[in-house]
Structures are given as structure tokens and as C-alpha cells.
Figure 1 (tube, helix red, strand yellow):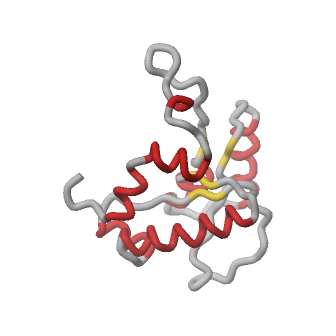
Figure 2 (cartoon, rainbow, N blue to C red):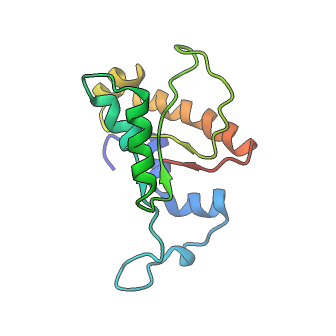
Length: 141
């Protein structure tokens, strides 16, 4: 895998994670028909990820209308917001039903986006994942 941080190598070798963390055997994850899995989960991230890239700040009622319209399409999961480090913005109990963690593909983007290296971000993810699991909240990444 070349110059990949050890923690990322660990994550990329997912079959052992399926066994360790979820109790799922590799055989259970094998595709069934023509190389396709039985189930695909689609997560709409437009309200969270897409709108943060807009130059103009959209009024809340416009964001709510977008989310309402997306929900009428039958999407089962729509990300509507995200949280930043509590070091920068104090957090409150928000009733999250799922937690997502995402790393950067380059050190430069990681430093610009979350002010840390990829390796440091993976360490941060570990604490978030442990906390979520202790509260029986599913985690994806």
C-alpha cells in the first residue's frame, strides 16, 4: 500500500474489521448476483455537504424545503448538518441516530479542512467511534 499510515492500512483491510467489530463473516459479505451486493444504502449528503459550498448563506426555510423535497423521493437517509470539533464550537446533546466519520485523501486537504494530519484525524475518529458505540449509535465512514 505504499506510504499509507498504519491506522489507514488497518481500516482498508476491512474483512478483519467485519469479524472483529460486527461479528460478520467474510462469506456473509460475498456478492450474490453478478458481483452486486444484496443491499446498497444510499446516503444523500446534499443538505450537509453541498450547501456548505454555496457562497451565499441560504435561509433556513429554503434548506428545510430542500430537505422536505428530498425526503419525498423515498431516500431513507438524508444528512442535514454536521458538527465541528467542540474545541472550536461548543456542542450540545443533539439526539444523533447515526454518526459518520470521514477522512481526507491528502495531507494538505486534511490540514485545511480539519486542521490536523490524516494520522491525527484517525486518532480522533477512534474516540468518536468508541463514544458512539458506547451509546449504541451506529457509525459509518
